[in-house]
Image (cartoon, rainbow, N blue to C red):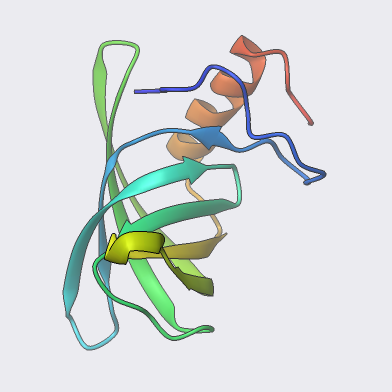
Length: 121
């Protein structure tokens, strides 16, 4: 589900979209952390989690989205780029750079870009 129809406006290679999807992070040791996305792009995801991760840590991210009446499931690999504690002890914003996003995920993001007139390709 796309909550904000406008991409987050910053100078970036690809636009980000404010979406709230279910997300799970799986660490190398098998630990699973459940959270939700805050925003997404072709090459990155911001996820709100209950705890910090280590910058540079490789992880697997599982995303479940509802888009255009369909439920989509993505299992992607990423690397932690930043962790920022949120105000009022609401969790940690974790920025992931995606490593080789799959074609289904990219198709969904390109569709969002086209829908909002922000295709950077």
